[in-house]
Length: 142
Image 1 (cartoon, helix red, strand yellow):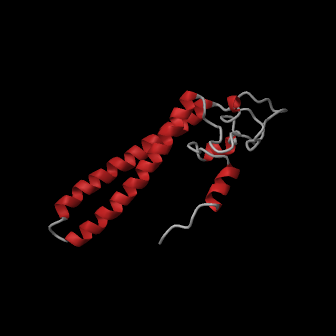
Image 2: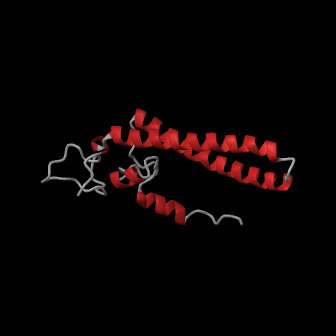
């Protein structure tokens, strides 16, 4: 059974498949993806707020065990970097949604499947290009 939020206008006889790359970008229900993106943005902002509160609380505990506090601060700052990266991706997707480029692969220009956008609403690349970019990426230094 297909998700009615993804395909609100489809009749039961001609229901499109979620991974059908031939669907035009204009058929994507922007309001569904906008809602998903705004929910993710709120989630990331909440995580950042909690992280900042935790960092502030660590200042009070610094006198007891400074090395433990330093370790926790490093972990919190790394987590914040991840949160900010996610926030940038979400905000960029919201901007693409406003400008009309949402749902189009930044690499090949083909439509990104509704199934992929529903799973990762901030996706910039179709599944094929994403796999290609990951496999061609240089190995990370350990």
